[in-house]
Length: 131
Image (tube, rainbow, N blue to C red; front, side, top):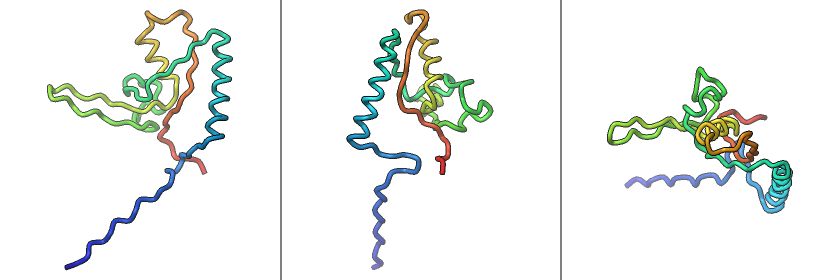
């Protein structure tokens, strides 16, 4: 009877291009962002937290490369539904401008004019990390 080879343990390391933040760094970053937000609030701006996932259709002309809509973004297609409805193409947001355009188009009747907002949050770009 042949011995089965053990699977090697996965490496416990952060993926290339990413990093972990610990205690003091997290606290310092949060304090900095809170101070920035306070300045925005003092000038009448409201915070906006939009979804991290958008449809490719919503990203549309805002995509980094319109001719190759999947280049530069992390995108995937939803499964088709049982009733034959095609699934949407979705992508992680790569900046905070395209989500603002979608939010404004979707809620323009409910938003004040001018709509003064600020946004802070993660974005995901499908680019090769630098050196």
